[in-house]
Length: 303
Picture (cartoon, rainbow, N blue to C red):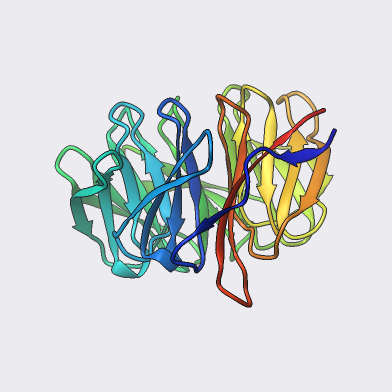
């Protein structure tokens, strides 16, 4: 069987667009950056029912602290990063930064949030103990897209869409230590890390998906069907789910090229996705471009 829905399409009010999504599988929650709703969307990961929206502003990035269950939000045009308690729906702390925040990533060992600058040239580094900015990483080119934290080395891998490359940031110096050129793809958006096999997965607007070693060697190159924005990798299932008007699902075991499993068209506004590694539900959000109506829905793959 192909990719199929496992929850009903849940309407979200108010309407409007979305950005990044993540899942806290341990606590059964889905978190989506709901720019149209000016805040963090909190939903039940079993039913898809919306539990509330925390008004941090028109946010973009979202990450979960696995120890506390608190959610870190990159607040886009508000030029700030916040910590939210999703149980009480309260904003606990906020720190301003000197730029529009896009994606964020959290290193729970170092207690750091890395927040990249939307269409910019910087990563803002936030210490979560003091909730203050402790540094700024200067990036090459412009238009950083997604980023990943390496749990082994604590390096940060940052996609640079303008230059078809991945910048590697040293967590000790907070400087770019090297560049991984990805000439096979253009306008690269998604970036995922297979930490066990030391490999990075990225795709571009030119219909190509690549796998590079963290050392910078091209491992695999395959065709990607259609448009791509962001992806999520579930290492336990070996699933790479990518969004771009729908869901494109690959299998990837780290030792051979990604294999296309299925593609389902959903709506033009689907451009982010997240996999619940406990249940295998693939979550997507979208906004209807003509009406602005917003929707959350869960899918899964049944081979």
